[in-house]
Image 1 (tube, rainbow, N blue to C red):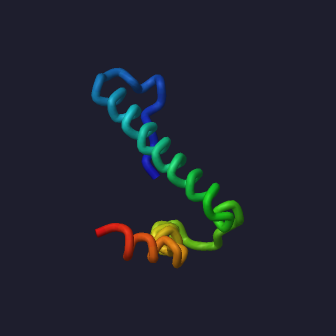
Image 2: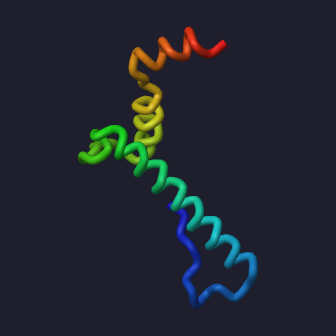
Length: 78
């Protein structure tokens, strides 16, 4: 896990930029996971997986689409 610099250690511009980018990445992940959780209830329960496997689980679970989406994509998008 990437940790930001403490406020007391922010003596250079590079460290402030680093902290900004870490917080921005954290927000993006939190928002993506939140939108997935609102769509799929399984994300609101405890997931018993190792952290390295969570990424694979999320990608696999999000790639499952209802059949009607496949129908729409196949026949309506050319």
